[in-house]
Length: 107
Image 1: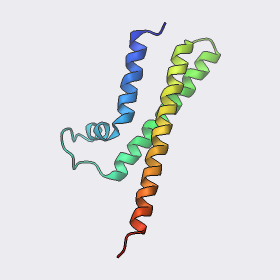
Image 2 (image 1 turned 135 degrees about the vertical axis):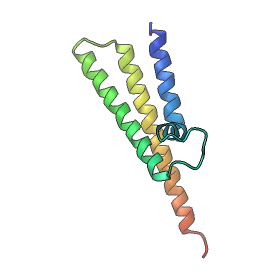
Image 3 (image 1 turned 120 degrees about the vertical axis):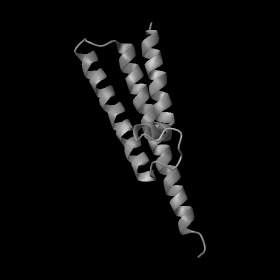
Image 4 (image 1 turned 90 degrees about the vertical axis):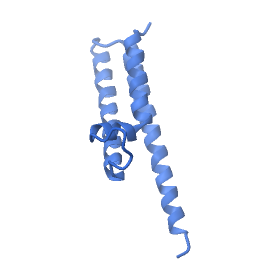
């Protein structure tokens, strides 16, 4: 049975991935302001978070292979990575759609 801490950590990681704007604002010292971070810095932070989630998943898988990790932690890490990548792909698709809409606008 997973520990409550593992579940709480998984939910907290999911919340950070679901709201990267707030996390980026906190990282930049702009809590409560909406005009602090640029789109580029938000995107960079989101990509960094996805990469870090992937690294954590890899570390958990290696630890499981060597017998040092619980399988539940591995499954949780892999699921977090899957959610992060799915979110990233969704944002990419929305950006591409917005770009195509801008290109089709009359001048």
